[in-house]
Length: 90
Image (cartoon, rainbow, N blue to C red; front, side, top):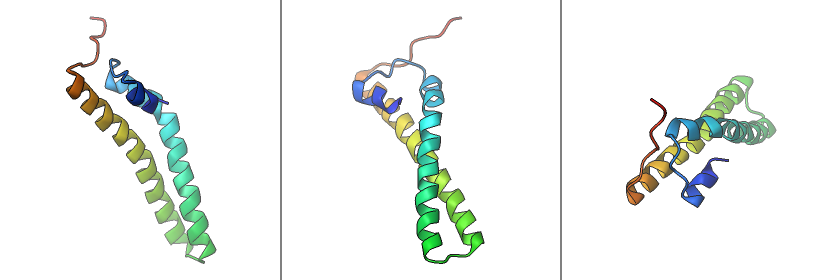
């Protein structure tokens, strides 16, 4: 999990690499959000269209929130520490 890189302060890798490695965990977070939302709404007898729309929104928010946290956190740590990504090969 690349969010651990924020805790460790390891933000020297390119942001694209951090995000790429976090996509699997972000997808799992999105799917967990879908499961919770659909379970609650389904138990309340919500219509199928509502379940689908709410599930899609829950996935987008769960997935997006995790990646946004990573990007913002890495950017803030880089700014605070005065560091940036190491230059890649030319």
